[in-house]
Image (cartoon, rainbow, N blue to C red; front, side):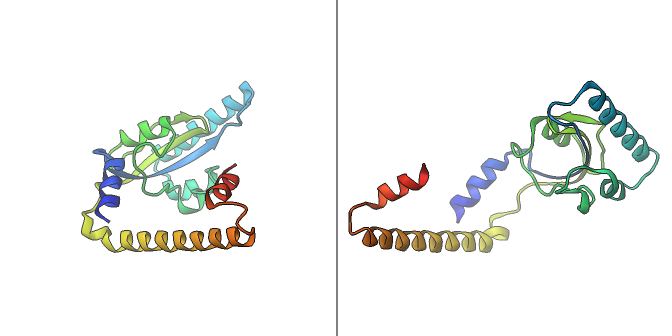
Amino acid sequence: AHQVYDQTKANIGPRGLIRPAHILIMIPQKATQQQQDEAKRRIDSVYQALQDGADFAELAKKVSQDPGTANQGGIVGWCSQNQLVKEFEDAAFALQTGEMSRPVLSPFGWHVILMKERKQLEPFEVHRESILKFLEKRDIRNSIMEKKLDAMVKAAGGTVTKDQLLAERAD
């Protein structure tokens, strides 16, 4: 459990965890100049409405084109470094809690990002039980997989090995 915690903490790094919210105006991959200009106009309008006091969560629900976050008021969830596209990550990690970015262009389109919360990973004791449950589930899955492989080898009359079955499934 300590190994899993230490690896997680190393992956998170010194910048800690962030919980941003965003409003996304998507740009199609092969967008015309007109589509790009329209997306920019829309995000500028969203940004201006927020500057004028519009509620971020309500506006995200109404206009954000991110289907995974719009219904939650744009909240992305807890993230660490290297989990988001670079442009979004750079802008988000530069924000302090409560601060909002200017429009940011990423491969997905235009974002306005609001930093909801920042934190460091809690101490090991806070995560101990969930890590132990995770490890237990992983061991149970491995045990089930081993039994299934044994059964498959037996059903094949010993003409294949576990390694051959795994290699076959990996392809």
